[in-house]
Length: 237
Image (cartoon, rainbow, N blue to C red; front, side):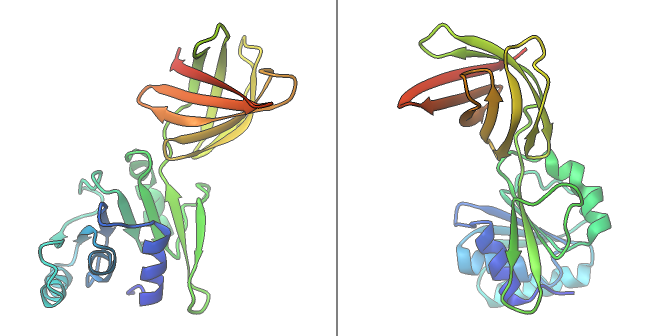
């Protein structure tokens, strides 16, 4: 079933597609989503479709729109095709296929935006629910989170404070963890791609929010309280 135009537009807008993006549509059918990504948002786009006749049809539509320089279509099996270079991935595949793809999706580059028409990812909760204007149609947006689970040692930048903490991660959520020989315990937190926020108990008298980003194998976090900025660099133990 083809995605209706208003849903295509809502999906691409929710993913904040720009001319700097590489959009890949898995199961691209007649090419509607890749063509829209190129025509309306200026992105470079690729459609991957198993049915060769649909691939040829999509190529015809791209030629009619004058987009052959920005949109390509390939015949292929989505389970064996490398789509790791996408910055935005679009899907309309069904819940069983989504779950089968999920490990591969979670291994993509942190910050990759994944948008699925109608079907979710079971217990991987979306970062955004997309409501379209037509009927009860909806879509889901996920932003691939960085992987930070494990024990970390943090050192204060320009100071003498240091601490260790254990991070437990479930998709984009940081869950409560034991102190693990540290004065700190993680009460919760969240990842949005490489951006990170977590609440810890024990750093100050009250629960403290640390915000920052994942940079390679380092966590760069900061806290502001009573107008005092404290920065920490974390390294895996």
